[in-house]
Image (cartoon, rainbow, N blue to C red; front, side, top):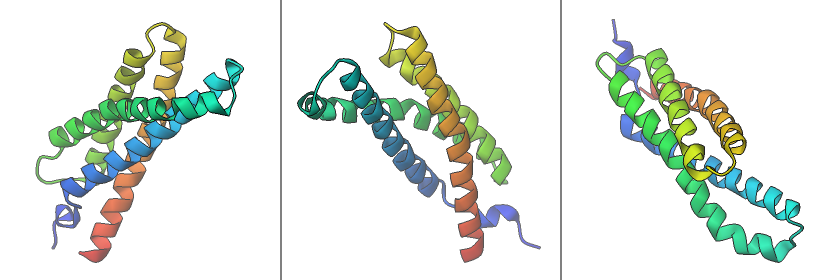
Length: 144
């Protein structure tokens, strides 16, 4: 009888994949916010083009706390034997807690906007991280 944790993907691969997902999602969210802000300010394409570097850095900055929370959760839950459900829950909870921290730091003048963005990030992380982990576990089980 084989141990289910034998089919577990490597933690390094999980962290790498979640980091990429968070980075892309953070940059896309920051770009959407830049488009909305530019249109609300009555700016043109030139203003948006000037905001692209700032949106990229802000997006990457918003991606860091959720991934750190997810990695901390995976480190805590990663005790042997590893289990998919435990890792899914720990990554989702850690990522959601990190998602709440991120917009609060970036949007202190408008608390309602920070809370709204935190909810969007927490929802994306709470759904996206477990789905990513499930696909990685299935792929590892099929190849292993």
